[in-house]
Amino acid sequence: VNKSSDFTGMFGYSQHTSTIKNLAIKNANISGKNYVGILSGYNRAKTENVYTTGSVSGSNYVGGISGFQYSNYISYSYSEANVSGTNSVGGLVGYLQSSNIIDSYAAFSTAPTGSSGVGGLVGYSSSSSVSNYSDLCEYTTGNVTSCSEANALAIQNNSWTSPIWKTVGITKTPLLIKE
Image (cartoon, rainbow, N blue to C red; front, side):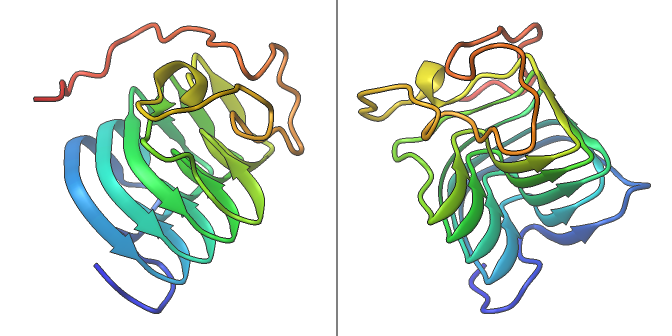
């Protein structure tokens, strides 16, 4: 998918009454403007047991699964996508608003790139929680030489209780196993 407009992904926009589960999107190549994700540009759906691979790029709110995650959760999911953008760029989610990420991780051959709000798991987060996550420091397949706050997990507007560069453990293996 190659668009120069907003809300780009398998689903441009998903409603809060929706559930997306048990889905694999492999070798995606997604590019757009704002709100860009392999699964959904703007995601309000319950998202369970989803994984993505490939690449995704845009300007603002760019993520391996969701560009902008609002008022719901992502659980037992992961992305192995290369992600690039300008602002709010994350390996799993670009911007996490009033949402939860549970038992999920991001891995990639090249760490997410951007100008501000860039993180291995989440680019920018507000009024959200992340539990049992792993970031690029534990699962990367590339050549990462350090695990710093800058390249692990964005901590803006959050109250993480454990050091962000440590893995706190995934309690359930995603059901979709890579081939």
